[in-house]
Image (cartoon, rainbow, N blue to C red; front, top):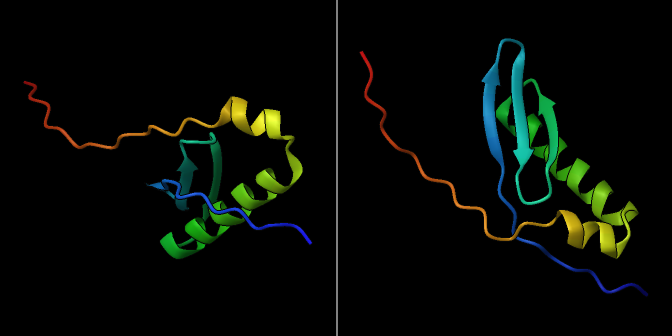
Length: 77
């Protein structure tokens, strides 16, 4: 029996004309959906499929554990 592993990951969601795009920056995996919940669920599914099918070396090559998300203000004329 396989031991289940868990990763805490980030989802960046962006509104587009026809729905939402979701990105997991730690693994550079993206998906989309009509609603925020659907986009997040689709992203989770895409990440889990990637993790199940990729080799351990591919996961390690793509995994960037130190993702920092901050908002800032820009001033322009």
